[in-house]
Image (cartoon, rainbow, N blue to C red; front, side, top):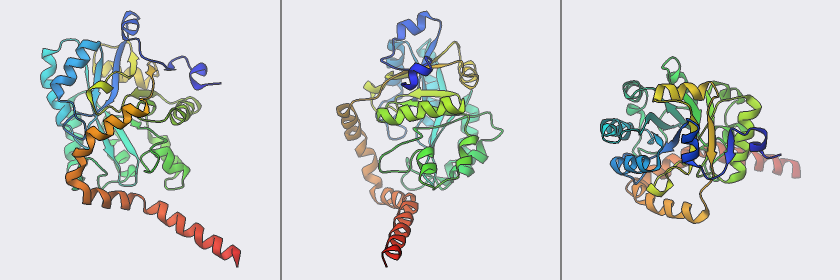
Length: 299
């Protein structure tokens, strides 16, 4: 049985924003990047698009908070667009961690104390803090901590469940997350199905977002709840009173997005390669150990 049949609050479908609004729900794209990290949209253009669509937005730039702060300053010109302060932190050991706050002051404090000084030369990739260290820092801050795309990506250890499945992280680390990103627009459908099943099995709160980096991405996946502001919306998520509706981008759309953001990484090619190498050391060690065991068995 497909996961969405077991939980009608999570649906793989094109979001019907007017219908969600008619039900009294606020739809929010919970995973969006702007020009302040590796995304292309300017903040003002992003807010205009959200206003036109009738949705809110959680700006979750990689290891950066400038986009959120700009959005909050500009939001008075876009009445009805709720901005959820967020950030996607890339851990040194692989996983991407989404952190959501009720206001920008709390987000800024977390960034200044626990992220800024640990950033590397490739600013949108892993910081010099492990998953456990980031989770330790988030305790007691009021942040809602969500495992981004837990089973992705194909060639990188950027999902916490992928790291657990491969033996890079202890399974107990998953208990420290407040929720799971059940539908991520950049993931393959089978990986999102696994994420939905995980959220249901563990009875964890779930979120959904496009992981958008270009303007046409916006609103392809939304999390919807009866709320009027960021604080009420995050509370609804934690209480599991939110629904997720959306579907993944197609191959062509992902290709367009990849081409659009590539120039953001080119100036940081060398440090980016070093970071990817360091993150894949566990995989290399496992390959070497497996090869040694195989040779030993063949003797």
